[in-house]
Structures are given as structure tokens and as C-alpha cells.
Length: 244
Image 1: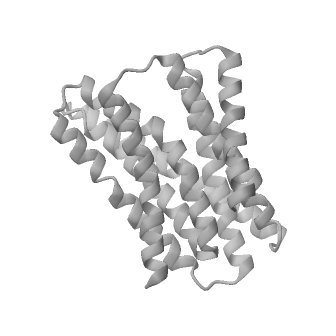
Image 2: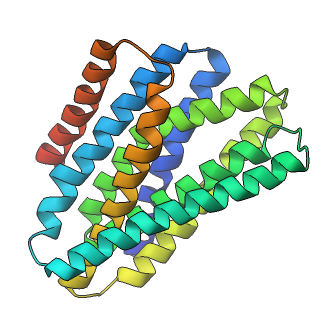
């Protein structure tokens, strides 16, 4: 029971990042260049998660074919989820949905499910790893919470509907975390490390193919975005080294 309570507490962290972003969007408007810098910072955190926290642990005990298979499956899962989201979003647009919620809520919910899956897998390996992965998602999800709330606000969605949508996003995180924990709990170290390589595939593909292009769209000053990326990387690397 203690493990479950701990998992629930850890799984709340990604939603906390969404809430911080939503509150920021509720009170202020950020320029595109500022958002680009924030997104680059989130990309730096993601790369630090992989290089500092995950890969050293994975390479400790894994066969090469397991590493490759896990990574490929993770990347494929990331692509499949994104294609599914784009297809449903296209159907919503074709149906002329005007509430401003559906097209925003779905991709965020799928992204948070992936966060939860990653946290559940990490928690099955060790509580400390699950916590570190969840902590990284606090930073990574702030831009998503901001963008989703700002979009709904600009579409005229009421404050009550916006907060209800943001609040309900804890559900996909809990579902993903529970699934990942249930599948990997008690498995051997090589199997758990293969699952972590699956997480690496998901995380890197989403960062390089989705997050970085989105961060580059505002065309913020290169020196600013580079500093933001480096800050995000160093921030998480130091946390991992001192708390991991």
C-alpha cells in the first residue's frame, strides 16, 4: 500500500507543472520569444533526464538487442500516439468544434498519459527514479499548461471550463503511472532496463521531433534559447547528482 500511495503522490507532479503553466496564462501573456526560451529549457531538461539519469542506469545491465528493441518500440509508440492525436484533432476540426477545448485537451491528455507511463516504469525500478522522472516533468509541462490555457482563453472558453479541463488532466497521468508500475513491478533488471530504454525512445523522439521545432517557431534570439537549453540541462543534472 505504501508503494501505491507514493506512486500517487509522485504522479501528481506532472499535473503540478500543468497547473503552474495554467496559472501563469491566467494572469499574464508571454511573448513568443519568451515561450520559445521556456520550451528550449524544457528540452534541456529532457536531454538531461536521458543522459544523466536514464542511460547510465540502463547500460548497467542490458543486452544490446534489448536496448535497441526498447528504443525502437518507444520511438514507434511516440509516433503512433502523435498520429492518433492528429487524426482525432483533424476529425474535430472537420466537425467544426468551436469550444476551444477538444483540440487542446486531447494532445495534452495523451502527453500526460505518456508522462505517467514513464513515471510508473521508473517507480517500478526504484522510488527515487520515479520521483526524479516526475520532477523533470514539472518543468517540462509548464509550457504545455500555459499554451493550453492561453488557447482556450483566446477561444472564449469560460474560466470554469478551463479549470475543469486542467484539473481533470490528473486522470491520464494516474492511468499511465498505474499501468507502467503494474507491468514492470517485480520484473528482472534487464527487463526493467529494456523498459527504460522504451522510455528513452519516447522521450527523445518527442523532444527532438515535437518540442524543439515548436520552441524554434517564435525564432527567439539564438543566444537566449541556447542559454535556456543549457540552464534546463544543468538544472536537472545538478538535481540528479545531488538528490538522485
